[in-house]
Length: 364
Image (cartoon, rainbow, N blue to C red; front, side):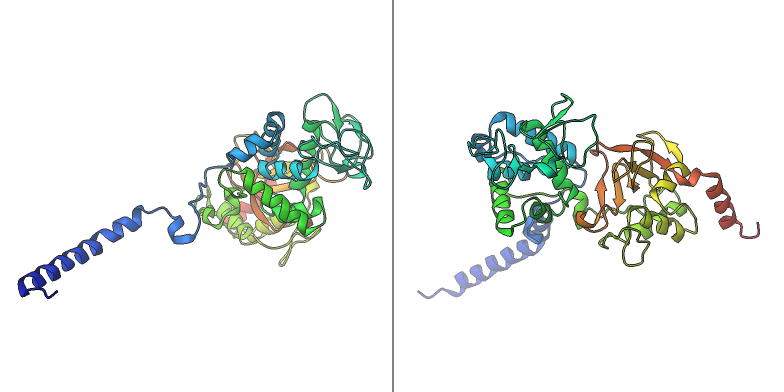
């Protein structure tokens, strides 16, 4: 069918108007579109420190209510994805429902016991351990009865959360799962279950692990000295942990802090054991960037002799070099750490105050 000149002009005119509207409106549409259209993922809520994943219908129907509550409680407490914990529990013993040897008593052929299938040697040497005793392992008291019982779901799930956290979770879940059971097919199976248990269908990581949440920490520093400390420390993210390391290629927990202060022209003790008594003690809630946060962690340490330290970079967050198996140097949360001992402020040490005076007035 041929169009008359009048109709053809009308069609061309309408097309031009539509094109003009599209040019004007499309930037507004793009601005209002959800970010997953541009980068393949949803916007990260950088203020969400809990990362509480909603349970899917599959999780609610498959996981016993008691177990689901424990997975969520201890996952949040330790800082591990609850759906990963739940997937381990499913893969190991169907959330304690299995009647195979070692689930409710004794051990299986490999020496594993309980709903989370801990090796007795990894748990602490025996199935039931008084928490007042000295032991090496992941025995935990999840219900407050003073005993770490490998057959008790509350204790076993807490112990599993601690083990996963120790070995790289929540940032490096695959590595943590591989340490839990050294087979990549096992890791794949657990992750698949975890995705089905999450309403989002994903295994999320804390926002501080996302590059989208590299907030301007240096710009928010309370003064230029702290800004220099943070600038150096944050630049070490991604480098490996090395016991005794002071850089430039690798660091241990106190080594990266020692180097960061040195980059700002300040000298503080090299080791965690020296850094703990060096700074002025700061009450929890009053810490600020540049302060140090200490933990009762590692052989021969205690509440009065902490063995691990992190650098506070913002409220609730620290930069830490944790351990060889825990992944690279990174920014993590210290709020949920149950073994936190306290905070100190090296910048208030008398020796450091003198150093600051000389930096400000070199003629002194």
